[in-house]
Length: 319
Image (cartoon, rainbow, N blue to C red; front, side, top):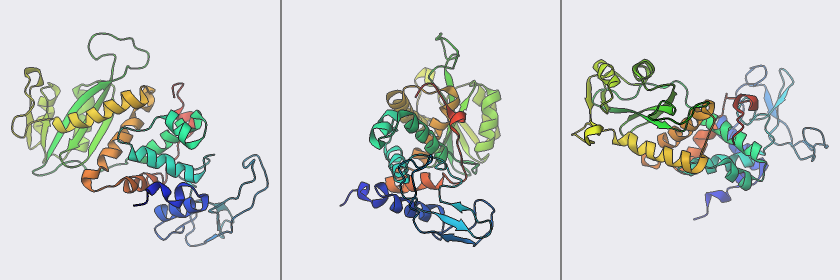
């Protein structure tokens, strides 16, 4: 069987544009102009042979050009996506997306820098753009009648501007919710207390669900809003009692922490939500749900539509 990495869109720019157009546009062509919004007035232009310029110093051919005959402006499938205004070639974006989606614990910016042959700064920013593409919008609540949803928190890294101390006050708190056999959602919260946790659980879990938690006190009040609430006492070394357990989330946290500590090692606190989105995305598009590496990559690329991330909004001194 030929490797998927032999596909033309990983190496050829024209093939990459054709592949992304098929992913982004249902008919393989734009439904409306991204500049003026007029429908059905766009036509494909021939490959443009460019002279060297500030934007194109090597005078490379410009692929994938379309023109709207209503507003007379040109555009490509990159317009209005996280790939817009990027110096990376589109086939390099396909490589980066595949590496991040096919690696269970993630890929470091240094590895992308070496593989893509770009600067470390470009690789770091490309990874954040892809995480933005993986980020989900507003979703339906997890669970439902007869379904189990687990809720738990973990602590990782150190809050910006703090020094290590006893306990977890100096650490970054993460709340996760997972529907057994379904999807997970993770949130970076300032502190693991009822004021921060209750609104997130209420907005993201169906009230007909059975809520499964550990013995944390804030869940006693939160659990009263659901069809059932059971808790296991980890401090007493109780981890399973019938349907009561949080082992599904413990497994997710194991993957997240091994990847975060082993691959990324550190991130700025303001970027933690994007790393969480990356691990949520891979879990929600896992092999156990019938999603292959190629399907996962396609889903990530499709999620790039309508999202922009400027470098100044994601800059961190630590890459």
